[in-house]
Image 1 (cartoon, rainbow, N blue to C red):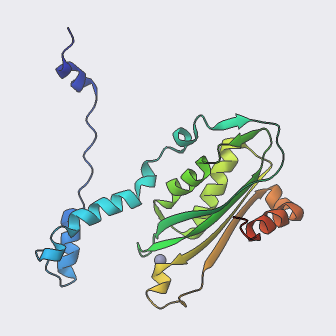
Image 2: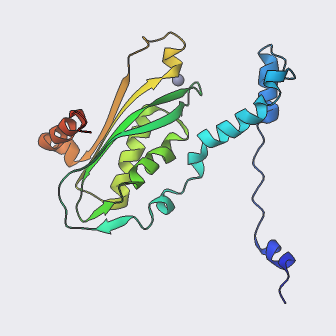
Image 3: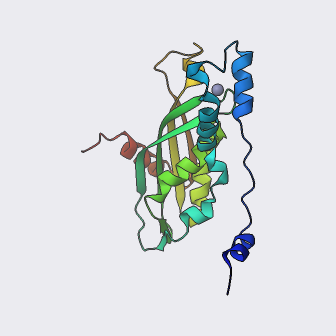
Length: 203
Ligand SMILES: [Zn+2]
């Protein structure tokens, strides 16, 4: 008879995650705060949890995430997923930047499940990032996964590190784009993508 004890041994224990709470407590102290006061007493634990969630993209296996959602098709029209909301942290200040991403590709022989595209965006957004790299990583991942005729990604974002520190006006946004394959070489393809992104939402 197999005992449960033996089973437990076979499953390796998950390596302990570093606990950031003591470090956060130290930051609070260095800021001149009293980490023991009512409002702050649980803050280090909350910050630890929040930071781990906001950087959980490092642990995401993109291949696993997409696995099973790649389909062979004879479809050669542009696929566009607009207005994908994302939230990320800038790697220079560890302050949030957030916005929308528009992703398009022209299939060659494969398409990717539509719901997977926002999940790819999340996997890269939930890391310490710069907007340019985030935009490129999403485009390159789709390129690698389905080898399409081309990929286009446009990212519009607002950065708290600029807004809160008074570096830039409150309402100015930053745009980045990554165009691969036909989206880079063919103006008509790029223009079609841009016009689809700019179109008013019909619902
Ligand atoms: Zn920043």
